[in-house]
Every structure is written in C-alpha cells, then in structure tokens.
Amino acid sequence: MTARRTLGLFEGFGIEIEYMIVDRESLSVRPIADELLKAVAGAYEMEVDRGALCWSNELALHLIELKTNGPVESLRGLDESFRRDLSEIDALLAPLGARLLSTGMHPWFAPDELRLWPHEDDSIYRTLNRIFDCRGHGWSNLQSMHVNLPFADDDEFARLHAATRLVLPILPALAASSPYLDGKPSGFLDTRLEMYRHNAQRIPSVTGRVIPERVFRHSEYQRLLHGIYRDLKPHDSEGILQHEWINARGCIARFDRMALEIRLLDVQECPKMDIAIAQATTAAIEALVEEAWVSLEEQRAWKEQRLEKVLLSTIAEAEHALIDDLSYLEVFGLGTRPIRADALWQHVIETRVDTRPDRAEAGPALRLILNEGCLARRIVRASGPNPNRGRLREVYGRLADCLLQNQGFSGDP
Image (cartoon, rainbow, N blue to C red; front, side, top):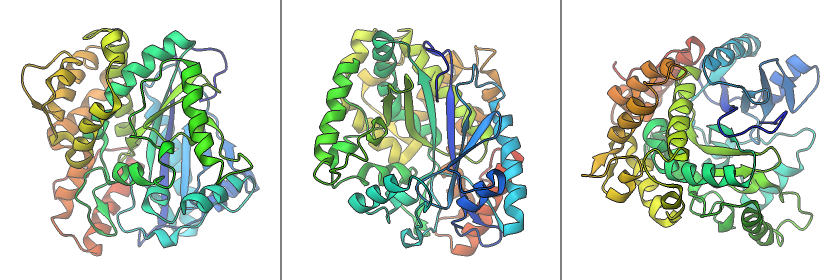
C-alpha cells in the first residue's frame, strides 16, 4: 500500500490477494504469469496498473497477485473490484487453456514443479532460492491475503502493533483454507502456515516465532531488522535482501509506506469471503486499539511465546481449537471459561461487525464460516476423509467456479 499522504489509524486499507494459475481441465499449475502480464502490458512487466487494482508477479511463475492501487478509504464493496478483474483475467487465460484457483495451497502441487520469475529484477528471487531453496511448499505453494493498515507516527504504530499481535493467533480460525499437502490430508487445517513457520529455518531470525516480538517504536524495530540483516550477511554479501519485507513474521511494519502488513490469512474461495475476513480482522484490531476490553499497557505485556501457543492450536484445528488461556480470552472481553476459537470470533463479530453499517455486508459471509466452519473444514467435508486425485479435482473445480462467481463454498455434497 503506497501512501499518497500520511494516513492515520483505520483511515485507509490495502488488500493484496495471490492466486494460482492452473490448467483449465486438470487444475495442475501452469507457470505462465509472465504471459498473462504481457498480454495486458505488451511486455514482461512485473506490475500493471488496471485502475482500481494492480496485477503483479510473485516469486513463483504460476502465481499472480491482485492488489488495491494504493490505499482505499473503505473495504465496503471492494470485493466487486476484485471480481471484475478476476473475470478479465479468466478471459485472458481461457485461450491459453488456463484459469485461476484460490485457497491457501494447491492440494497436489509438487515443489519440483517450481519455476521462478525469469525476467527483470529477478535477482531477489534468485538470491532467495540460493539461500533457502524455494523448491519447498513453504516458498512455492503459499497463497495469502495481506491486509495493510496505516499508522501516522510512533504512537500509532505502537497501538496498532500491540493490538495486531494479539489478533494474529486466532486468524487461522477464520481463514484456514489449506488442508492438503501432496494430494493427502496434512493433519493441519492451515497447512500453509505450518509450512510458512519453517520455510526459513536456515536463518531462524527471518521468521522468528511468526508472532512478532514486543517492539513498539521505529528505533526498536530497526534493531530487529538489523539483527536479521546481520544473520543474512554471510549468505547475502551484496545486501540484496536487506529490506523491510524480508522480515517474515505474521505482521511486519513497512515504514517505507507507513503501514502494518498482516500476512497470516489464507486466501479464501472468492473475494467476498476474503474481504469479509479482512473486515472481521480489522474490527478486532480496532477494538483493541480503542482499548475496548483491555488497556494498551496490558496488550503490550504479552510475550510472543505465550501467543504462539494459541496460534499453533488454530493452525491445527482452526475454529475448533480450544482456547483455555483465560487471560488471553480476557483480552477480548471474555475469560470466565475455556471456549473454542469460533465462539471468540462470534463474540467479536456480534459486537464489532454486526453493529457497524460499514461492515454489515460482511455478515453473511462470516456467518457461513461460523455455521459451516472455515474453508479448510468445508473442503474436507466435501472431499471425504481420503480423497483421490479425481475427487480433489472435482472439489477444487467447484472452488474455481466459486472464485469467478464470487460466491461462498458449501461443504455439502
């Protein structure tokens, strides 16, 4: 999100969503993002301006990213902008025998299929591949939605970062959409995040514990970054990766554009569901920023190790994860007894989404998640306990249709 002026808390929003390009019939990945961008730009450009949105490349050649063209004032109705561009992309891909597919991971992609972006400014991708070997699910098979929230100064950064750290552990409860790995159930409903947690093990400081440390000032954040740069230097003497974006925690500060970037959300079946989850995420963070349930001082005290325990449970079980840390529940105005993560979200949605006219349109999509489960659970229900490739192809074909129709997916057969 490139700020055109300095925006304060919740005065703007930036959304980035990644999609897979797949064969129109088999649904196996097709590494042709460069050809798609060339079809609209006339050259192998890394980004093309399409008005309300931009389209851009990613590390893997089978991925395309759609993102807001700068900050938008409201998330309301934003899904329609994505729907229009997805329809245009489908028309461009159809003659190539390809289409787009959503969700957090491709269910049977083999990492050896990876092809890196081969055109201009590919030095970053080549360096990442040399250091981390991107032929792994944690690099080449991850599709996420990023939510960017602005801050104007150190004080606003502190409030936003403190609040966001506390919301991160429960995001998989709403957004998990990646139950399969190598064509089989992985044992995690948010397999994407489980892979993401380990993708930089060679240099652990890059990802940390995914939940960011208690850092609440620009100067403190620079020290964290310089620690990562120091650990990278023996492998990256030219400093190619020494930028804010190399920090791979679940949310990162982008002081270059004065925004906090949330990275923990799996891509959903369609933009309507993605934007609804962005609305719920923003609502929970805003409530904490306003100190609706606990003070800023109490929020800042939470250590990442304790928050990580909640995150690990939602990565595995999503909305069914039992949260028994009563102090954590008190952060959200609850805390008398252990509850499942979906009950926590129901409380947030009823008190912070349903009561706001600018968020009310998210209600039906969020009710689908609360009533039928996260997308990963609905996919598993539709696929059966041990689906073969044909069954997965059928279910993910339905998901590809949902993407174009901008409709939620039901797990019922």
